[in-house]
Image 1 (tube, rainbow, N blue to C red):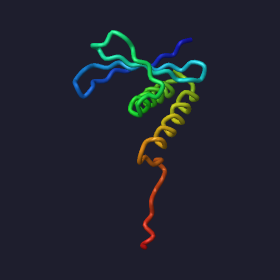
Image 2 (image 1 turned 90 degrees about the vertical axis):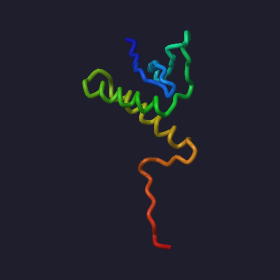
Image 3 (image 1 turned 135 degrees about the horizontal axis):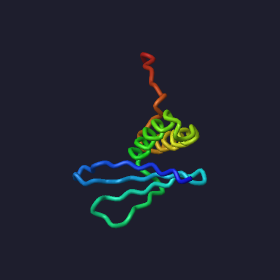
Image 4 (image 1 turned 30 degrees about the vertical axis):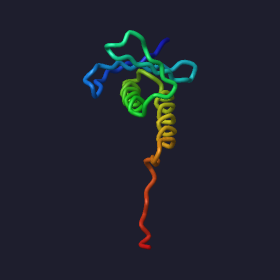
Length: 101
């Protein structure tokens, strides 16, 4: 069974953008296309915004028992990895305490 997740956004230039994500063989595949483009663009490394949007979609589908929790967990791991790789990014659970020195 093919499980493709699709969502649409509007870019800063006010152009419609459609994004598709599919998990097959344990790997995620992302593609997007602007309305003005004829061909799809495939991404080896999707944007963090796309990953977070997909995570929201997956979570809602999981709550409705439409997909396994493994899909949500796999995207959570990819998001955590991406946040660590971004310059100046810190994990969400990190906190800094001032010791008064």
